[in-house]
Amino acid sequence: EQLGLSQHQLSELINTEFQQGFSRYIRQQRIAEAKRLLLSDPNASVLSVGLSVGFSTQSNFYAAFRDITGLAPGQYRKIHG
Image (cartoon, rainbow, N blue to C red):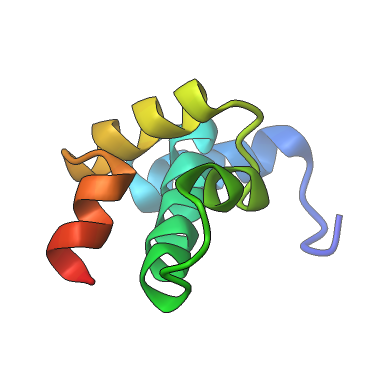
């Protein structure tokens, strides 16, 4: 709405500019924020991080995190923290 685009136009723009679908783009943005939170707040539980970035279940969060990073969230924190 703020861009003055329809949903279809926005979807086409994301597909063209980022070579991926809207849902994958959103998942990547959520995982990028989750990675930041996992490292910046080591006392936060992995589940609370996943919920705070918009995933509704732990299993959805783990699956998306592993799909995008190749690691489970706890492994990512251990390796990069």
